[in-house]
Image (cartoon, rainbow, N blue to C red; front, side, top):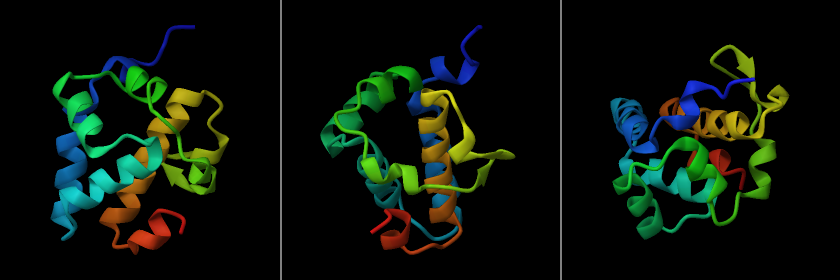
Length: 116
């Protein structure tokens, strides 16, 4: 089976959309970065480096230093699909990120977004 097209898309090409979605609702780039760091274990410097290198979503998640074990607590529907039911691991990681940014844009408290 062919890989989904999103796997080869660079995180940097989608990142401005995450920022715009958050800022449109009064949230910040720093909060989006915090979510990404929480999810993946990247430092801010490493995150900035991955964005600058136009790293694909597939490589971004495959090379993540430490995927947060609490990410399995991220549940709900994103793009019409229940996150917790996605079988393919890379797609599930992408949708976790989408869901977290969506929660941020909807005004959820950061402590709840980060499952704290």
